[in-house]
Length: 108
Image 1: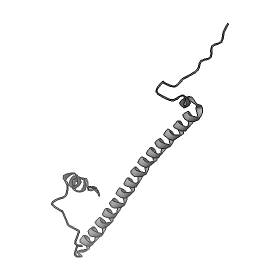
Image 2 (image 1 turned 60 degrees about the vertical axis):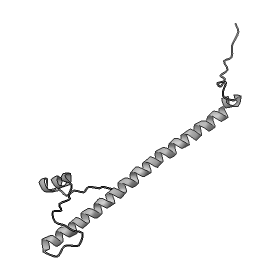
Image 3 (image 1 turned 180 degrees about the vertical axis):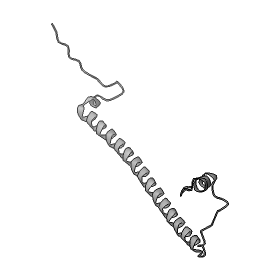
Image 4 (image 1 turned 90 degrees about the vertical axis):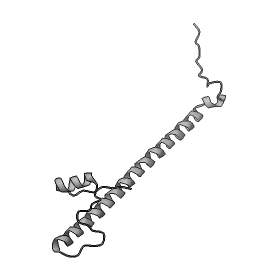
């Protein structure tokens, strides 16, 4: 009986040294680092975007509370406070008028 050894060779278009474990490890680590950077970049972008939207909503609702307090007390309204604005989007108007909910809508 003869024992044959199986040698894995790289494709002909790759140099012979690319079959070494060192090269394969280096490529694997490089690819994993690139994937990690991409995933973390997307995660940070999403979290910062959500934080910015939450801060904008909190600011808008605080301004709404101040305007409602001034209107209820009969005080003059601030310059940027309007009662029943005509350019209010339909979806936002439906939420605030029909459902009696406080709502915000972010737009660019």
